[in-house]
Length: 254
Image (tube, rainbow, N blue to C red; front, top):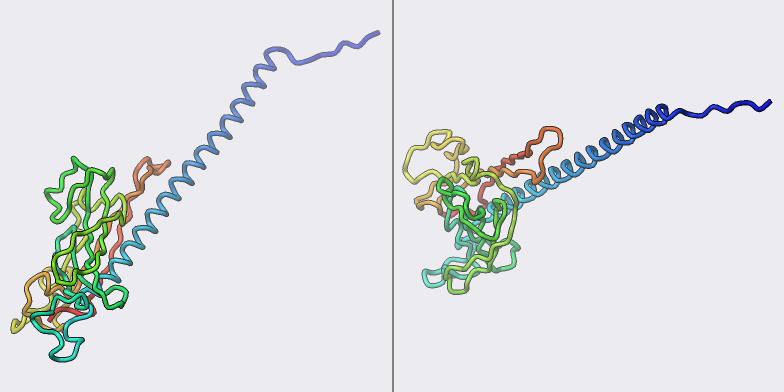
């Protein structure tokens, strides 16, 4: 007598297939979320690293503003007729909350470089409350630009040649100055600590200066805000990283 074989019913097959599809879909969803989180994390880390490197370079370069000074040469070598030589650092030439220009021999090569940092934003973005910032139609996100051009032999103004330096900088959007300048104490004026205009540090022990701004700048406070290009997959928000640092000039103008 032949035994009767029993298989799966149609309902059982449908249920099994539904369960398999749910499990496979869940696995793919987890993989997709994991990949999105990894990409977002990598992007945020890259943004953080780039912002930190940008701030470190600005700190190093601004500390050299005005190097080498005229008094580094023997008496009589530097006169009114040659004080704009390419071998003389002119210190800070222009200083705004969102841009700065200074001269320094960055590589100790005997030739001074005119350095510019400027926040530039895409067309249509308001810069009314961001002194020193500029509009650049070629940009899609606010970008801190850098220019480093050799000083002209006759001391004439150079034309900056900007290249992107730090991307997606949000200082202007948040009305947060990138640069704050702390002047040296004026000659013959009693100085109280901290210097007026806190959070500038106490400048009372620094050598007095009779120069006008921005040549009288001794210390620069830097604050850089960069935003990740991708949203965080968990919060749906763009992560914002803020960097702070302070740089003090090694060769301040007298």
